[in-house]
Length: 395
Image (cartoon, rainbow, N blue to C red; front, side, top):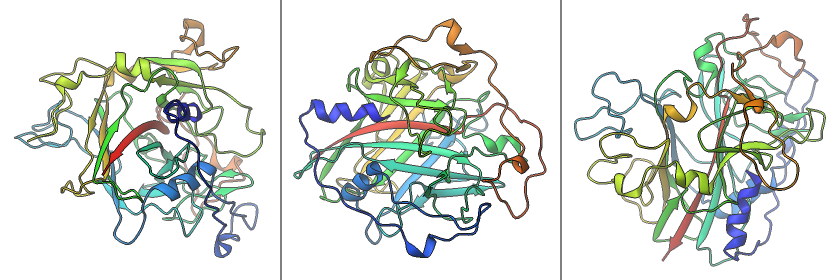
């Protein structure tokens, strides 16, 4: 989602100074498959996030991935429940409430949860760092279901960059194949819920948006693994030829500089629920009675990680309807000649999504104490979801 920084450039916000983060010496040697593993410094986007997002004592945020399954009193318009509706069940075992680890250790991904042999982790990155006073903040999110034993990663900890690549590169190869994917590709609507983002400059009011960000704002994608060359799902409204999206492997040894398949701002607007169908009080609703579009975005700012009023904090509910991903297939060649993106043609699509899995014993960068005994591929899965949100602040 590198190209989404053009949103801020278009608003004439100028890039500011850089906060240098050094690697933590205590983590330079963490026993891995290739011996000691060197931990590199955080990316520029992560450093920008450290400058703008407040991670002081008690500054926590909430992240959850919910998926509708129709059981009980769930309603497709009410992912969070309330008003007689049941909340949709969590895909990651419940909400992750944590303080992003942006300063003390150069982590690139915050650990969220562990289910079986799968870790769920989240990157927070800011593509452009505005100068003070800061009225705008763009945050790019990368949520991944990964193998917890890659490149010397220590179980239950955050994910780092190494010279061999990101510890969050390898997709999960869980024995329980349902855990490998962030969502059930054959299931119902998905809601990504984030609240309680604190900002360093303490605004008294914040508004979040994924709408009205124009053709240069690259806002959402799904792909079947975390590699730079990973296949992108042909979700509703997507275009090929987008900027490389969250490629974490240093160098070019992992298949080259593949472009991405993403939904840009104009296509997001055309395929998202009208604002008149969205309601925050008394129950957060993402449609009026029944869904009419593939996406819905509900501003949930000015509440904390427990949904209590907290002026200035950022938050949202981003809903991806099953219509956006069900039976869509993946794009096998996302590159286009020239700078302009292009529609996805029939020849670009691999209609049968590849199964998810691999033989861990053949990959030297994976070193589990008790390696997976699953040698076969599982069901198709989504190992990464990326999205970008634009926040406007006032005092």
